[in-house]
Image (cartoon, rainbow, N blue to C red):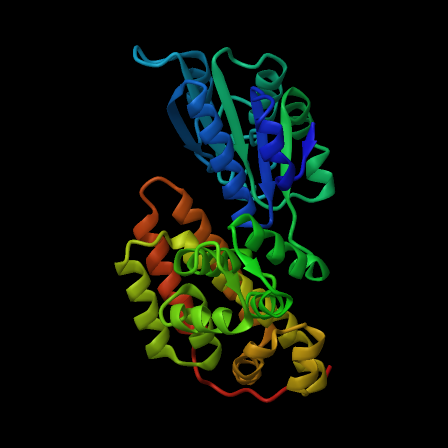
Length: 364
């Protein structure tokens, strides 16, 4: 069964399947889907939970053991298997470092990860809810035997990016779901300020609901709440990074870390900013026109001044390098004991991206 994220709530009201694979490119929608699955499972007596992060040294026998045993105090349990990159389950030809993808499940295991997932899907373990999560998967990866088997045994939920033309409607729906009566101007204002960033939209909608529960919301209320909450949140950090405010970016990052925020909650918004920057930078390097670059990259009006300044400070190759570092931060943050390393890696590339060196555009 294939499910869209917005269909999951209705689905869980009717049934809970033994297997779900949750993947995609929109972290907020993925996390909300997983929260919904976990909550429903807990309500049905799944009182135990085991989580496994797949890396190059992952021992697949641990998954076999987890799916085959319950503790003395549990009658049902959730088993989560997290594959941080677009996975290619299976074992490598040898245990040596042969250049294979470090995220390939079972790369140093005697058990073939892909075959094991197929076997588990064909014979779902009794009293176990198996949740398999991954990141972005292309069409070919979604046709792999392991993915299709999991989908047929239960359901797949793929969180695709929200198309820009659908963004205002998505924001309006989220406002209604929060019990807010927002007029068209308020929806437009919030959609523009959070364009393409679901996490930012949710944060601002939560603040609006907290400050004005059930109230009618206009554009002025949106501007007041967004401005009031922007000082040290992850999007302010992105703005400081684009503006070349290294000291301010470091202070903002330290504040977020000190508040106990998960590194992934900061990484998502910053990665989104970097992707927008990379797109605009490629156009700017060809044309030398910052206004044109921002327009073609569909940069929100509020961010154009900062983005225009950022375009003079980097090359596309540098930005893609920072994006690769962001992937490393993501992997560290999801690994056991890697959270401190994730914050240090995050600090390193935020400082690099906020550097003030001016570069002239280079015609193609």
